[in-house]
Image (cartoon, rainbow, N blue to C red):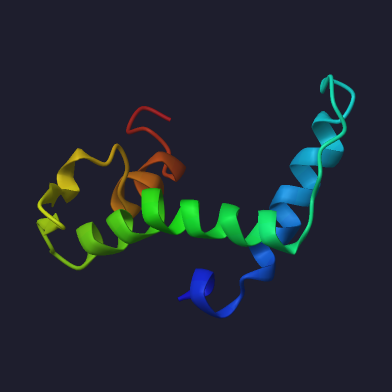
Length: 86
């Protein structure tokens, strides 16, 4: 829902990454609304849709296994918790 209702989050993240990495780039990146829109769409198609489906108990999207996605919301939250010995 955050992704859907606050698309400017992606804009800010892309801008921050470009700002942080600009000294390492050998070219001047072109950033405009079309490129940001394409980045948002790729993030949705390759990440958000699978994490959301996995979280909601859906096994397949367009005959592609959702379980093949290397992350879930549960896994992200679990990584934030301390280990049992900590």
